[in-house]
Length: 264
Image 1 (cartoon, rainbow, N blue to C red):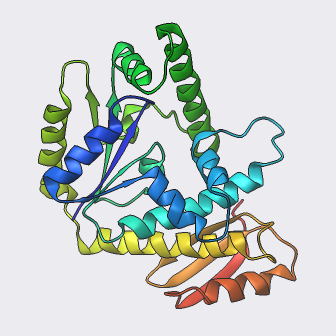
Image 2: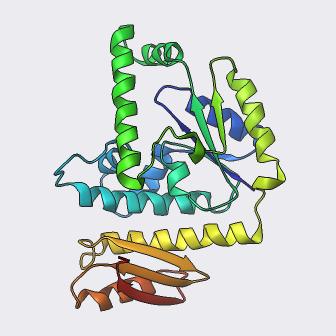
């Protein structure tokens, strides 16, 4: 019952590969739009959620906190969407949002520029130079996004369990490789990995509720969970402490709450 995340540069064939892999394995296939739809149920903008997954904050960006709120909702939606396993998610954030769960297989797809330019041109009338410029702009934004939020190089191979280059592999061959990896014991769900996913889902759900509650939406928190016990760390005025505790305690699945200052 593995979860597969497929990260790729724009127009690199990730959607087609994800759909074929899901069909081959009998898994559900989730894309960014499905997760955005679930996250929007918290009452926020669909476009804002999409921007949070694509556009990096700039220096002095007054919307940075809004991005934090949106990403909290996206992570909650994604963890709920894949927590039962047997799912393929294709989006640039999956391997970072679903961290520290051993049955999550992190796949990175790369493709030659000619392949990507041709993919752009099938969707919109552009010259090769215009298509290449668009691809570079999107890739640069994703690079900045990953570095700002997680301090990592989005293209760093060590962030992935498998990197596939479509220069010589067909989509069908890449699909076969991923399916074979998914069947390996190393990525089978275990009681420990199931608990890790459950804890991540609960922590994400608590963070999302805090992010949309009027009394706490102005604070940024770090939430961890273990077997229903939730720890919320952050910086806020003293009167907010009990509000944080009350909101967290009211989330389904929470058995206890510890609230404290942000780690230094």
